[in-house]
Amino acid sequence: MAARRGVSPAGEGLRYAEYAPPPTQGPDAEAHRGLARSLIAVGLGVAAFAFAGRFAFHIWKPLEQVITETAKKIATPSLSSYYKGGFEQKMSRREASLILGVSLSAGKAKVRTAHRRIMILNHPDKGGSPYLATKINEAKDLLEATTKQ
Image (cartoon, rainbow, N blue to C red; front, side, top):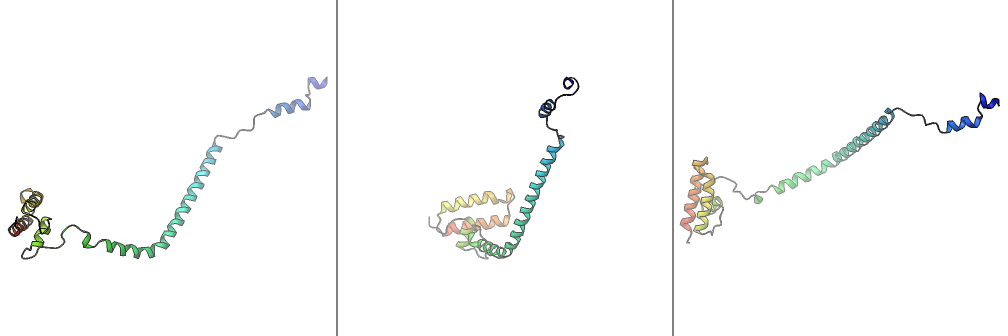
């Protein structure tokens, strides 16, 4: 009976110990784990970027020459649709057709339409150059005078 009054049997103490909640850690423990994971991910990202940059620098030297040669080939005047160069002393039919943007065999109606379109954009009263307007008019007059239609 002495066991019942003051001293409990060994099995009863274990029963309560089994159901005791596990020791709790502070809320900071989960935050520290998340921060550690983030730092590891950032470190791996920086390392991958550094290796990729190193690889690119090693490859860049041979590619630089290839890229510059390709750019020179692309930038040829044959790809441009604009007339490069100044005006000739005496205007030719070829130069007049280049100025108006028509073919050498264009009829009078097409020449007039092209002249009107270009003069609207380059008229001196609208801020265009008087010299360019003179050249556009000269081109129109030359093409109209030499066409049959």
